[in-house]
Amino acid sequence: MDKEIWIFGYGSLIWRPNFDFLEKRPAVINGWVRRFWQGSTDHRGVPGQAGRVVTLDEEPNGDCWGVAYRISSANREKVLSSLDIREKGGYTLKNVKIYFSNSIKDWVRGVVYIGKPNNPDYLGPETSIRIAKQVIRSNGPSGPNDEYVYRLADALRAMGVDDQHVFEVEKFVRNLSKS
Image (cartoon, rainbow, N blue to C red):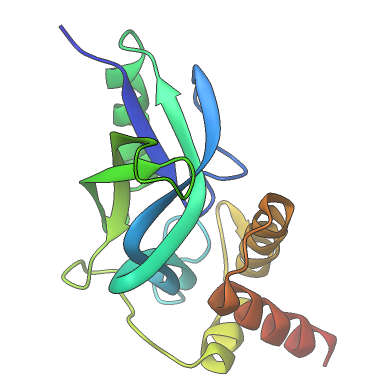
């Protein structure tokens, strides 16, 4: 018998989960940071002109705030199957501890999709200005890449999350878009 599952979202899953869930809660995973190091040729770019979307990078003292979704046992396979398709551009599923506060007692086991360096769409570290230059020229089936940056930054601000990497990329995207 399948069990309920928690799914942690740190990118577009924050504002656009597109699946049924029983519960949605702000959450954090420890030891990881959000970075615009994953290429997107299926959502925010196209083959030959990849967009940049976020993935997670291991950092011992890091933390990544996002949203955790509790999925019913009846919907578990349907949701995971649809996310496997949505996240097919280099993401793999990883088991994690998801914390709901800064308390080490308030956590659940869950899963997160991560684009690791060994996937074909991984672009890797780059300066924020170069990331922004790539973002403003990229567009894909899910829309312009700059929209992704703006929506992620807005969602994090609404949650009260301070993510310097995301906000710096957003600042450069806005400045480059004006010129």
